Length: 120
Image (cartoon, rainbow, N blue to C red; front, side):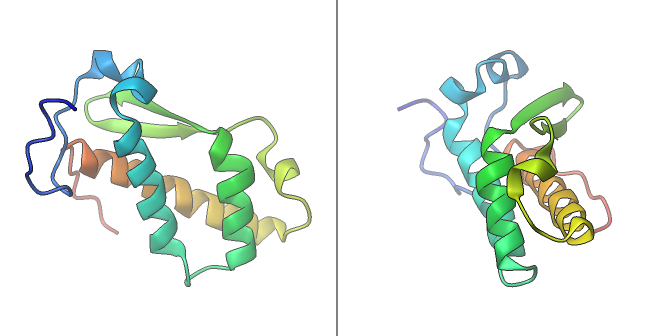
């Protein structure tokens, strides 16, 4: 497939090119999928599964990972994320969404070799 498929540890940082991230779904689709999936798995069983599933399917499926430089990523959410999930507790929704996006950002840093040791 590409040079980065070298048979090394799949959890190790992937060689990252900021210019290629402009076309992230071409160059880094697998890494993005893994980051979102790992973040989901970290929360599964710890938070309300209905809220987690709703956020994953209705909000984060329409989100956009953004690279800001210096190893920093963010997750741009679609407009009106709360309106997309229907009837769930507002406070619980905000807490799960915040933690989910933080974990995605952390997974992106890890996957692309920008391991920032920020207190968990």
